[in-house]
Image 1 (tube, rainbow, N blue to C red):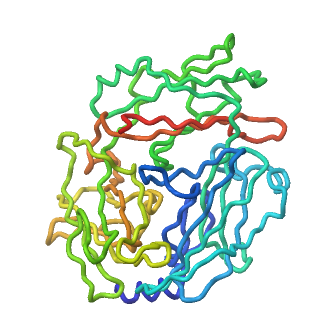
Image 2: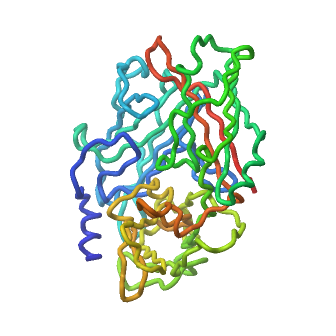
Image 3: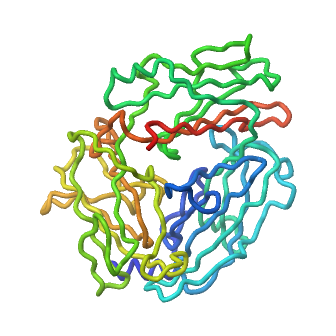
Length: 417
């Protein structure tokens, strides 16, 4: 089975029907390690958000194509409204050039078990702030979709400030966090703030738990301010836990939380140390990357083209959950729930198992549970002490042009280390 899958990767065959999704999605199994972010990483090494200012549009798309020969990939933009539906704008409303771009920057891998080509594409600038879907396709055929990625461009026309009033109500719950903030729009001409402003919040850059169209608790027309101060638990966030991690930056000396490395298989197969549930454990503080990952090769350097792809085996000890599906998730797969990261229950070992194809590096991850009765954090637990990054997006419904403009972006760290 592993050999067949490796052949599928190299041949670049798509598994499943290609239907454009207006979200972060990869449509072929040979496309790996997709990242859309500003250049470089910050001091913590977190994956940076795919958000840019109108005054510094520096987002770069990178990905690997597990192939022996180069493909001709093209890119186009789709402008979206606040809810990530295609807007009514024409291409020339938000772009100064023709809406099709060729990816011309690439490098071949060097001495890797699975040959791949690393692609790099700096995003051309847009003329309007808002939501955009980046669509990548092959040979100019817009139906031959390879991947889609969301990105946001903002123009700071409102100011957003964190507000700690009423934060003491957190004591009522040991597993939740509360976000209070103020939006000032004194520099804008706004006639119906309640209807024309929309706020979206996401936690740790995740779209699977983002909240849309959050309503203000008060509107202060006299000082042109929206107050988002929440007094009940319906507006609390499940804080979750610090992410688990595995370190295989070196294959000569695998790091923390790694188990057996089978060097006889091609590609190599690495077992992550078996995990246990944390649902009943006390909170343990350590510094994670909020679900991020770093592609690093400590053996040969320049992990961009020398990093090896491996089969990485995850497992967690548990009784079999009724009416529930378990996934291993992180920024490496945009927290998607797919057939690849879906875990299968092994009754002999009483564990949930999944095997993923990952590039050499350091990975944060967690186990997500989809169930009508159990919380997503069933295996991880949830603690108000957890360090999380929240992002506030403020949209304004404009008449000219008739679209949702992203007029404010503000990250709020909770329990920063």
